[in-house]
Image 1 (cartoon, rainbow, N blue to C red):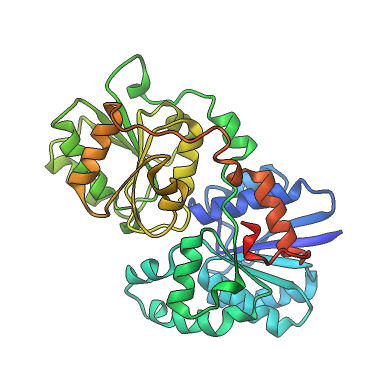
Image 2 (image 1 turned 90 degrees about the vertical axis):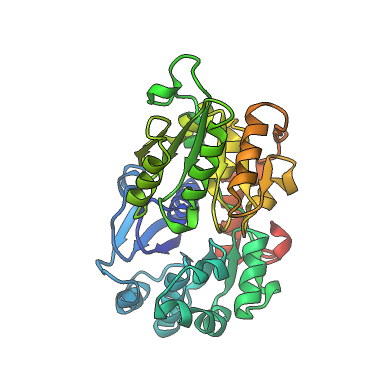
Amino acid sequence: MKKLTLFLPSLAHGGAERVMLNIAFGLQARADVEVELLLVEASGPYLEQARANGIRIVDLGCSRIISSLPKVVRYLRRERPTAVLSALDTTNLVMLWAARIARVGTRVVVSEHCNFSSALAGARNVQARLLPPLVSRFYPWADAIVAVSAGVADDLAESTGVVRDSMTVVFNPVITPAVVEAARFEPEHRWFEGRGDPVVLGIGRLTYQKNFELLIDAFARLSEQIPARLIILGEGPDRAALQQRIDSLGLGERIDMPGFVQNPYAYMGAASLFVLSSRYEGLPTVLIEALYCGAPVVATDCPSGPREILRDGERGQLVPMDDAEALGEAMFDTLSGSNETKPAADALEAYRLARVTEQYAAIMLGQPGSTDPAIS
């Protein structure tokens, strides 16, 4: 039996963490492999979900990713996994260094889940300045490099000099049996009871990247035209600032931020409109989920992912970044029915768990053709 290990910092409620957990579930269903999650620190809201589904978790018990290097080396020498899939740049570097030190023949696959240059532009620390040369120097050590969208791959190549043809694009495994089941439920929120005002939905960590202040400003413009409500699901460091913005606009009765919820898919299925307001992404999982759940969507044309997912606007409206007026107009047009687009029934097949799992299994096991970028 081949052992496949997935390595990441924790199981925090982020997009990359959820994607890696889905991959773990998909690989676990195969009869020919054993799956482990190797975590720098075993924490986060997805931890119990992983344990409940029988995924073995190895906790390195470290507070910082870089300090986990010696323990990762020891893990590789002790467990000798057939392959490791790691996610997020610093974690990827630690795994590449550990594999070179351990010298046990483990195949290492690194994955990029976000637009590299945009993520660094928003960072203010020394580590951010060091990452491009480190990625340029050490990513070629990987047996395979996976990017979750063509935009992520293109940007990584331009930002670091890593050869674009060395990367494989594999979309995220977004549509899973769990999502299919969860989407059937009704959301537990008073605004969905009866036939009230249309509800606009935003989902994500309350951080600079997600740019919920733009969504709030656009919603304020929308509210001047039609009665509507806005729900923003998620938690994060910007909560207080966002609440202050809501209060200053006098929208406290029209905007609700319930925090992290266990079943966001029920909200997606019931919402009148889903909006992605991000400054940058990789391949935004929530946008695909919202499309699958049947919500009309509007998204900023940020790097990277929305344009690929929405096929240049065929599946939902794309608007310029940081333009509250344009976003508000697109929201109004969609809610009024004058510009509503929906994907074909089979348009989201590329994001189904079974298909994506087979792609990752082929790459991790080094099967012929698995590193051909055309696999996407």
